[in-house]
Length: 447
Image 1 (cartoon, rainbow, N blue to C red):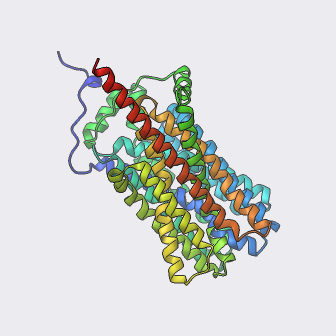
Image 2: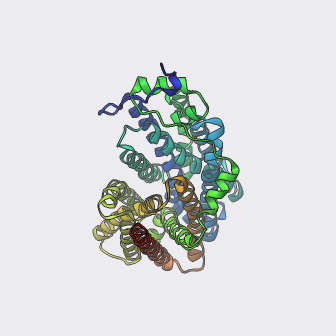
Image 3: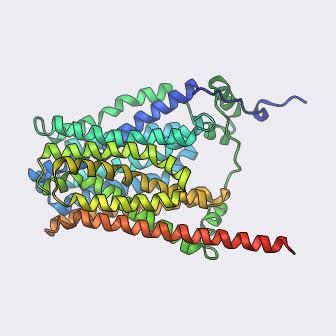
């Protein structure tokens, strides 16, 4: 019996990276680059905004503004999946790029803190929705066996955007003004027609919507594997998956993962927002303070490429705990005035460990979860961590406003130590539970 197109086997994947995979990865990489530029630009121009007292801006208001963007990211991240299921991954990516670009235009023309804050909040919604959508896209089109490597490559774009933000600030803020930096962040609008024309729709979305002929044509033409059709989950199924995270003794394990993620993202976004300003407070010139942003994000790129390999060899929980400990040491040392070359090295190493430590939390949760509950466990761990992302920029502003700026790096270091403790305890409990289950299974087998 001949099989219909919708039930035919998936095409074999070429050992080389297919043309479509390169196209999708390249387009998503550029979109995430713009995401990183827009995310980091506020921290890069913040020292100038405070020194010139733009809008009468104070340190505590600056912290609030930083939290507006991360709150918007929380909203965007939590709603991205639902919206993408309705309109498609491609359309959501285009919408996110359009939103954060236009929102930067609002910041560029703003005449008050309130309007500027609105722009940053709307930008955050677009930024928060883009990254998980881009990850889903490249996961669909990555060649077989190279998904993790492909996602790692995609994540380097975010840090490349951070590097670009520092150079935009260095080149434009002093001679032209801070508004020019935000006008640069509007330019990704020119990328939208490229996405409309060249970016294909997600294979998973096409399969889920029953557009199997279209999905098969893309998969066969560009030699990528067609994802299996997944059963549609009801609201009751999603609610049951969430409740499963708290049944039995799982509630404590879940809480530990959430607390570790909270501290990790507090650290990531607190440092990303306040690094140039805190380095200025340590006595460095603005140009040098922005150079630290470049070095920090270079470290982030290296860390993303190294952490996955280390986790595959030694285990994600162990690497996450060690990475957070090393991050805490590095962040604490940034508050100690050292030789500039030594400080650059510390900033680089802190970037290596800080950015990938949080990623290893997600890897740990993914590994320790059951296949049918993995997406829920990782999604909620990320979502709870986003509250830390909101809190981090606010905390830095409050410390500076109260004259306790010296405690900025120390506070972020404490957050790193707390995440190390939480992920370490969670990993130990999980290992002991696994050993107990194994012993019980052996005892059952002997009867």
